[in-house]
Image: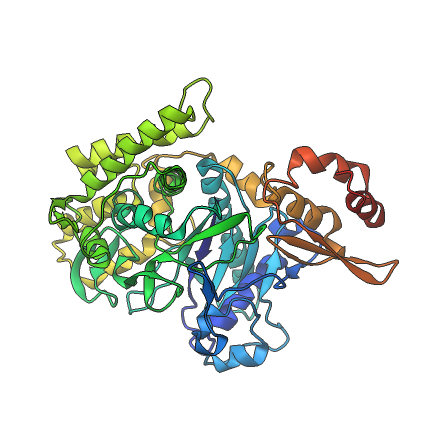
Length: 523
């Protein structure tokens, strides 16, 4: 599993610079930062060879001519295209830098008008939280570098999902699944879960509607931007279940489930539950034990759940009955407890070491939401934000349409610890930590040890000057003595881990020797 976070970007007083160019400067700045140079020796670009963003899991591909430009993620914008985005492109002496692969196995790049950090592949929700949070430190290092660069406009980055002016940007999740699971089973098993999941992992938002003009507070940043139940798009007609079929792995063995419905989370508990519970639901779908229920109108339910922060509303099922969002989540939790007890993954002594903790936290928050949502203000992000906003409303007599509340909402997500309101609460011990600051800082420099991300990250660290391209499923080396390129495929996500490849890295400081043993098949 892994995360993709598009950061909101703003350069106060620098309206002549368009957001796409500013985003390239975030990538450029990180490439020159101390944090990056501590873990990599080069500026590795992205290998687009195996990318196919228009392949649909339902069995067809969208014609390229019919695709929205934002769907064409298998090419890199040129400087001329950046200029066409609108506004000045900035100082030509600072060429746009669109893509880089980091020493921790992650990717930092420009996704149209936003800088995006894609975390390395991990195998459990705690590591998903850790390497996603590492991305916030990467973004912060870039912001600090830009601020210290003479002549550059200051850039602020926000870990949120909307500018409250009808624009939304994504926080996506990715999960590895067996290709043999019928896609319709994924749709039917996930849709009710996703329509109600925000009660645990929503980031909270001031304003109702895509432009935020409706007065009020809602649980999710993203819910009002979804318009379909199933579809390929990610920026228009957004679907609850995305059908992009781009496995980044052995295609006839795996699929990558691309989840676009989640909020960007700063809260570690919300992020942990987002990954942990979804992984368990996918396991139930794979084995045929997921709950069977269907909402009459899933998209309308998604929005209604988000607007119902008191958690009192009932939502119509296709069979004519009605349920609350919490009742749906309890059904999934109880099914997961039974499923995991049967397969042994939740056993306290012989289990996998993660499932029991996810189930316990899931039950803890559902119980707390049922009794008093505000009891979870130290854990769940939307509750923490609502609690803070209510304090301001009480103190200053502000109605929900007071623009000052929108500014507080924005300030919550500022990635600068001295500015961000989430970080203020974290510093004061009012938000629960699940991973330490030290382990997050280490994840900025080091890749996960148990996936192919270890191989990718170590290649960047040890041979970065000779790695000319990389992707999730490849690393491309330039052999200086032979004047040729050599592409190493990494299509098995659990190979290339530390156990298998660390001895190889330790044995060889010279690239030619390293590759000679690698391609000999002995690793």
